[in-house]
Length: 469
Image (cartoon, rainbow, N blue to C red):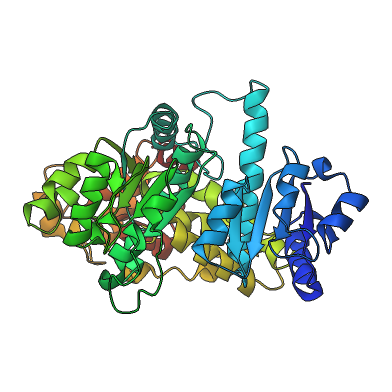
């Protein structure tokens, strides 16, 4: 069990944080000041120290040097860019603003402790190029290939474009690239381009001089300059306005940034990692994204696979989330029923891991008087999901089936349901669910629904073939 020390002078916040962490299976100690923390405890015995920035006596950042190799996460209610940047430049492993979201805090703690443990294994010679990235779950071939590419690209200064659907974990990949680079002792600044209004994005990224526009009462450093020496992660870069794209191009080409209203440029050394779920090549042809910027950021492209293409990884992620939420909500450990596993494997997950997180959290909250999660508790809307290849109907279409070169013709002596049942039973030992659905000319969702209605269980070999692919 990982040990955490909380240093916070406000009793209510300290108690709330202790209870949150204890619910998530951490051993927690606490102190109201730096002086008491150092007098009562050996700081190096902890896996993580969480400290408020403003404390009576010495500031929380003093713990960074005193703790040695123990990582220090700084909390601050003064959530300005400057205080966060200063804390991390002094050696804080991360910062979080108060009031904090519980999930945000738990995720930050897991990430920091996971990184520290991974570093210890590496020092002991326990890591190889194929070892999974801390914070990422998955042993499928596509994920192993992604891990290997991250390990190869991370030590370089190459610009990286991460492409993947919404909710696949693009920021986790960006963080892994930063943590495994020689820039990991500097900041990684993350910016969601879609979350900042077009009118503010340039001033946020590039900063401004006093008087540059109405309301610019002081000079302000932009996020690009704040990432100097480190990594700038631009999520959803496809949403960046064309004017801001031109300024970003200059940063990449010339290695300098000029704040709004300034006549002077500042040299910056920033590695850019960008992410998008959109087709930037198509957008550039339509004039909605600068082609020269596209070629600049697409030096190395990492493709993050959607959840539906990761086979057995889906179940492993679901079980990990189940553990987390059981601990968070103080419930005895639950397990997934076979029907829930079938539903999870059959659903397309358009929202990917983020949608799976919501489904598992909801299931844990609603589960009563049982130690199993049934498929009904997942509340997966199977009827509304997009169907593969737009084949979209829950009705079996014999005309379409007969005309598909890849599908067998139905016998005139069999009803559609009889034919469906016979074909599945005859071929499920040698085909995955995806292959069965393709041969039948239906979606995986339609195949799953008909299995449920006709009472056709998935054979063990089918599950093995599906997870292998």
